[in-house]
Each structure stands twice: as C-alpha cells, then as structure tokens.
Length: 121
Image 1 (cartoon, one colour):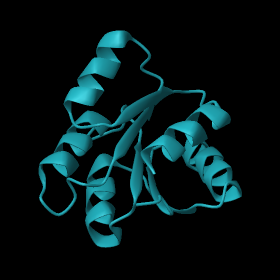
Image 2 (cartoon, one colour):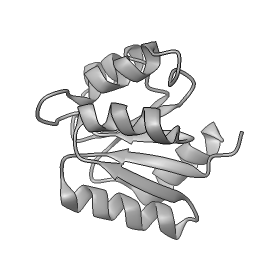
Image 3 (tube, one colour):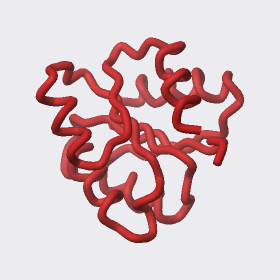
C-alpha cells in the first residue's frame, strides 16, 4: 500500500514545521500532533499510512505511544518511524522493540527520511 498520509508527532513546533515542509514538498498529506497521547488519538481518528514519532516529549513519550499503537488492533498495521535526537544504538534497538519500523535521528536528513518512507510504501 503506497504511503500518502503521514501523521507527525513532535512536541517541538519547529520540528513539526520542518517535517511538514519536507513531507508536503514530497507530495505527502500531513497532519500533526503535539504529544504522545494526542498522537495515539489522532492515529486512531485519521488512520494515516505512516506515523513519524518523536521520542522525547512530555507525558507519554514516543516509545510509549509507539508501543500503544503497535499493540492496538485498530492501529497495529500503521508503520512508525522514530525521529529523535536520541542517537545511541540502544535507543534505536529499544524503539524497534516498541514496534517502530525504522529510526532516524535529528537533525533529519531529508533524502534519508524520504528514502525510508519510500521503502515502507
């Protein structure tokens, strides 16, 4: 199934703006959420083709939100790409264990993220 709609979950307005510009410029339809909790709720409402998930957020963090999405029958088939400043190998392994399909670090390299999205589509 080709990826057309992407939900961006990040507490930083700057990061949401950068990712929105990158992804809409590449032809994707985007929506955003400002927290892990809001991200889980919006994913259930919108059923996007992909979620780009930050890790470090107040309240429910990206690991917890990714785990919630991957365990819920309604959202378990929505791939998640973690997008975070946490760049240690252990962070990546933990993210993948929560159900993420891929992992990119900030600052985001646009061509790398777009290639990872294309590989999932």
